[in-house]
Length: 456
Image 1 (cartoon, one colour):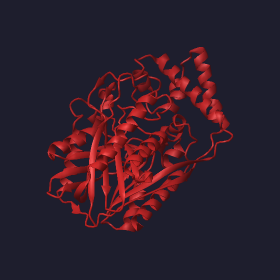
Image 2 (cartoon, rainbow, N blue to C red):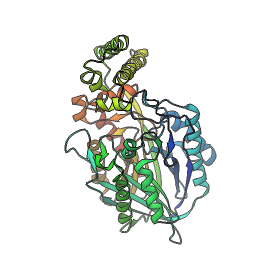
Image 3 (cartoon, rainbow, N blue to C red):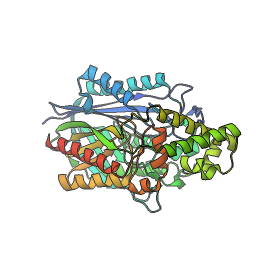
Image 4 (cartoon, rainbow, N blue to C red):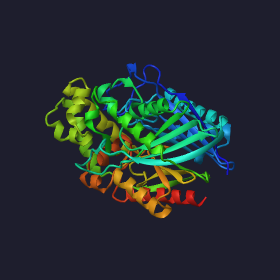
């Protein structure tokens, strides 16, 4: 079966005045410098009867509106089915977000619409540029670069997976790299710079090593995993990208060709159980916030409002220029606004969350996606069951921050401890919190779309 593919890239660097997302509450972090441009990179694959598109955008997150609008534009100009278009984010914290997170970066609808059109343009141009290709897949292991930030010695996924597409004359066309690690290396060093962070640098290294190739980075299940803190220094900040790229290139030297490059896509809505906030929880947050806003009292905030809202309370003070009163006011403001949102439809909101899971297939390679900041134990469960059902010859990429935004999806360990990911994230996503059954439910849905893709 012949395989054709095209790849294209468009710039989505924000114009002046757009805020960056994901580094604190009401900081008004409008960018000051462009360290490197943000991109939307799209790969379109066609087996002669079915076509699918993978679009990687250098945004922190995207919402359903961005996803639906981008898919609609691509479908209108190419005919690719909307549910065969996967849109995933690098999750750079030095980029804007489409749809945003409450208090963590103001939305700019004009920029978001433009970025959506640019992402669609990349996919449309890639579709027009299709040419015959040969595909190969490989994986490597990259240990010693990451850590689990929610528990000492907690699990990380060291597997790195690659897809390479070569033109019929052997020249490289595209390379996709999938790895798990929060891209916050440059956020600490240059918080007011626009940058793709490690995912962009990985692409730069691969493109330098393989002239003519266009590289894509697909962010994995890194809800609880970061690159090691020592890399966020001027002396060592380049190391993660170099190591990721080196591992990806080394893996490809022993790649296996995809002999039957069938293209398939499957998408479905999964109903994920949540629990209703208790009125006592809402009233507690609201009462403290109103009291502190009215009185200016900041006593004991690190053990109450600070502990609930951030992993490192004193970091919030530093990010507000060392002004402790300003930091506490911003957290109090957040609590008032999130409870306003929640109380607006509290009684009528269903006690479950509907979210998309999706899978794309290219021969023995599958990419499975969800909209969360997925935790490692859940991703490892999906990976293990996929391997057991599909055989070790099959390769799996796990794409998160895809096709929407539902915040952190923690495992039971974090849910039981009411951690930042389990207890605070639902607030800035305006959701009910997840429960112990939430992770297994989304894992089951992901395995179901994978099964359907494999049967196509």
